[in-house]
Image (cartoon, rainbow, N blue to C red; front, side, top):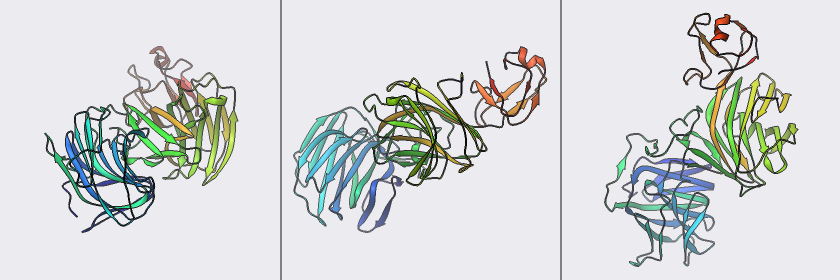
Length: 415
């Protein structure tokens, strides 16, 4: 195939990418990306696309982040008979041009991006059919995408306007240094790289916050490559005020694709917190509690402690447990985020093993580590899995507010 882009990596929903002399053939029943590691700011980007299935859409993706969902897309829409320029984050439409399309026919797409000026060209015309100004993205990765279709892309060429194409030395893209990190210890997210997330639905990075969008009939999940058995899993969750019926939360002890496992959800619309288990399409409520002061647009801290079959839920503090339950269907697995029927935002998502390391317990410089990869005293609490006895000097140093003897399952706040 003919392209000057390199380091191609796939992401998104399930799909296939087949490379041949004819081009890159993408097939998916959902949203499926093939992103290169080539980046540029100002350029002309073009391709010849053949519609193999007369449904869904195909797209050029440019100025993209790692996931593809923070980008511009130039789509070809067979059923709608149009090409469409949009911001992938929120499906914000920037321009539309009606065209006549047919199956198994090849069409030429081209976009020119210089600064905030975006111009779209159709076929061999030298006159843009869409011309707008937008400054949502100034640079990023380039690639192609399909949604619910099969499309063949050939002659995928980027011609720089003032910069030359650059490639990272590995096949896994990294975000530009200007993107703040996502605060998390989940595997693969430390540098805001959501490519390690096994995702369904739409997941994007908005500054240093992860945004998830799910439909009423299809829950969006983003499952990290982090596996553990006994742990504390916590995060700050904000349900979008523009989607008041949305539910969002944390999934844990799940399989890799999020089809089976436990879910802790908040539903601000009816002030409810629910702990449930999921077996495929079947959801069973373990326990639900109403009357919780939840509000859309507000950040709420949710936390689940899982030790064996014991599951304990806290919401916005530790004054009282919101849910205390027992269930042994899932005793270990992956962890991640979930949202349904709208949008939600996630930050400070941490998975902490319940074992802690205690150094110099009887000495003056007592050190507690509650995260395997974090600094000493990273959070304000710890859960003990072993009985320990420390001197009163430890309490005097202000590290623990109660007696110097702590037992399995004790909850200890750090000051």
